Image (tube, rainbow, N blue to C red):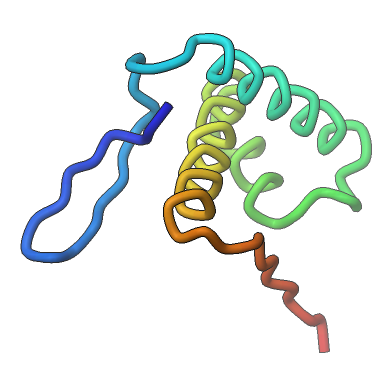
Length: 93
């Protein structure tokens, strides 16, 4: 499974989750992000800012697909660059 690639001039642009590739992996990403969104709705204090914003602004299913898309892009980048995940942690003060 790869995100839609629309690159030009050396600038890489990754788009939506395409329906090419493994349906099972795509389904797992959606299920995982649905679980994460439900947890964020139940305990908003534990949700990250981006997730909370997505759930507030968009319909629930659209937000979960957007979260799955973001996760797919992160996973794809990690695999192609052969790097470990580096999480940015914002400090509050």
